[in-house]
Length: 292
Image 1 (cartoon, rainbow, N blue to C red):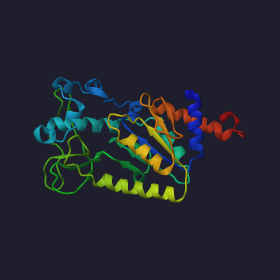
Image 2 (cartoon, helix red, strand yellow):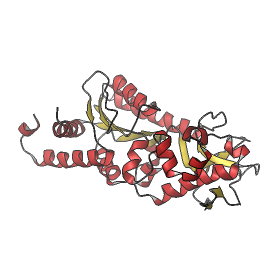
Image 3 (cartoon, one colour):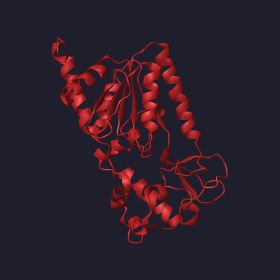
Image 4 (tube, rainbow, N blue to C red):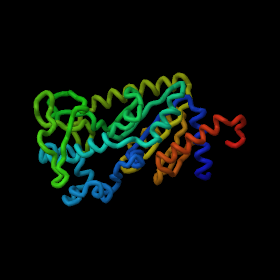
C-alpha cells in the first residue's frame, strides 16, 4: 500500500472511531525543533559541553548527579526546562486535538515525554498520562517525603560556557535539601511516581468505559522508537485488549503487530497534517468510492 493510500485509510479509521487514544514518544517533538537524543551523536550535538566529558545520555539522565555534581545536573535539566518552555508544539498537536475532541468517547494521551507539550497545545491535563513524569514538576532528591510540586515559578540560570547552573539551585519545599525534576531517570530508585500513578488510574477508568460502551477505539502512535519501547508496548497492549486499530507514525520503525493496523513512514507533523486534510476531503465527499 502506498503512503498516500495509507493516509486515506488512516483518515477513514479516525473518521469512524468513537474515541482516540494518542500515544507519543520523543520523536513527536523533533518536528517542533527539539533535539533528537537518539544515539550519543545526537545527544552530544545538542550538548557539546557534555560531549567533552564523554558522558552519554543514559549516563547523564541519572539521579546520582544531583548528589555528586548538582550544578551539572541542574545545568542539564535546567537547560531542558527552559528549552521546553520556549518551544512551541508543532501544528500536528492541535490538528489531532481538534479531531479527537469531536469524538463521543473523547481522547486520552499516553506519553513518555516529559516536556509538557500536550498540555501546552491545549490537551486536558486530566486526560494525559506522563509515564516518565514531567520536568514541570519537582520532588526532593532524598526523597524526604511524597511531595510533588509545580515548577512554574522555577527559574534556572545556566552558564553556557562552563555548563553549570548558577546558585541558588532548586531546593525541597519541605526539608530544604536538593530538589530534582519529577522525572523517571535511568537507575532511578528515588523517583516519586505518585503523580504518574494517578494519571494511569484515570487512563484505566477511561479505557474501561470505552470497552464497556462497545466504542471503537483508534490508537494514534507518534514518534515511539524501539530503544525504550514503553510507548509501543502500551499502544499494542491497548489495541489488543480493545480490538482497536493502531496507526503507527514513525519515519523508521514501522513494524506492526498482527491485525488491521497500519503504519505511516513519516514524521508526526507531516502525517497528522496529511490525515487532517484527508479527513476534510472525506467529510465533504458525498460518496465513499474514492476511499475504497
